[in-house]
Image (cartoon, rainbow, N blue to C red; front, side, top):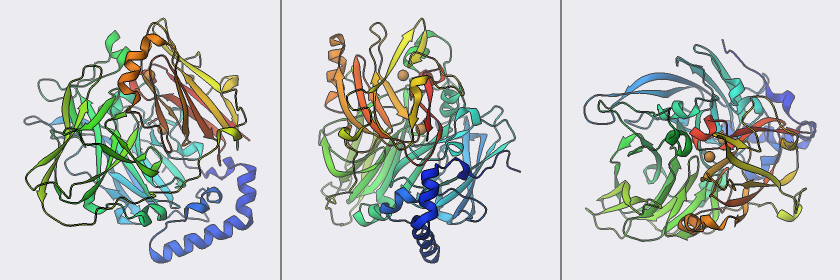
Length: 514
Ligand code: C2O
Ligand code: CU
Ligand code: CU
């Protein structure tokens, strides 16, 4: 029996309830019916605002999945296998292709969901300690968000019920128990969650084998091939855990045989603390087509892109002109050290012809306008500081169920938030993540001139465009974001996605109230 199962209907706002009770419900029902007849449940993007319908007994889910978190073994380095913690899954009901196993990887199965689909997921904890899963980047009822207060004990099952109302994009899932997220992710618990929708499918981007996901993680290994998580010590606490081996999709020295065609690369920084600055080894520019919340309107060109923990970036690359037998190498061009090392090798293994036009536009979205924010000119400011060895956010450490007065927002409001990274003594980069929303980055300002050098090393490589759920805030910097609280009331998190900082308490709740 599920330990916890609820219809989230009671948490829908009155406004949503009324909207659903009206014409919106009829549209949605027709959409779902059409979907189930064709075996495809993609709803049109313009139904999003009316489609936040949770599952209940009268609307059985389109898809039922079972996910298990358990100890296991993985062959990563030559020799002894590595003890890992991993997710495994199965489709209980619905499309069999909703789960795709990454071959030879400790990572969890990739969940492939369609916009509009109603999903139920039973998570069973077979670990020796409490855990809970968070669906990073998804817009969900609070009961489905994986807040640490919902962590389940060993042997228990938690049931998530939600409808996918996000745009197409590259999202991911990982544990979120308070104080142990860092070590649980490090042990291997993470997976991708890819959402597709009609607009994305119509764009005609590379698909199938030409749609490649790369999950970047770094690890320290012991002499007998075990993950080493150095918990104690000031160094680990300050910068977080940085590994000296780069794993891509759980494998070292990652190389992928590819054809002379265009590719779509979805890249997730699934590392605990390492910030990457990625570039092609031969110096060609990167074509960026998507960020955390899906496709951009138009592709952008960057020589390097900075990707901090939790962030995703999507690239398009045409391998058409490459000679068979050559390789194109994606490097980490580390800063400030300046050293470069390969992250992934694309080995041109066979010749194939395929059209190579990059769709333009890639997608259409309706960005919010700063002028419409309820606190225009008065951003809600959240300082990040290190005070006597404690990481603080909004002047406080994490409290499981509490919010401060300035952490309550109104359902339906568009707000400006400002992350303020001005601790003069121990300023560090902090990738700031907000649950339950996709936001826009609307401004950056370096306010402490002593950090000018560090800032310049990344300034031209940040990708702030499109929809984001995680944004890197450099030392001495203030970053402003524009975010709207829609559909669901409840308690959600905002925090630093450096997992060691998060576990140390650099995390807070915010509450959405009608
Ligand atoms: Cu990916 Cu609250 O985190
Ligand atoms: Cu998240
Ligand atoms: Cu941090």
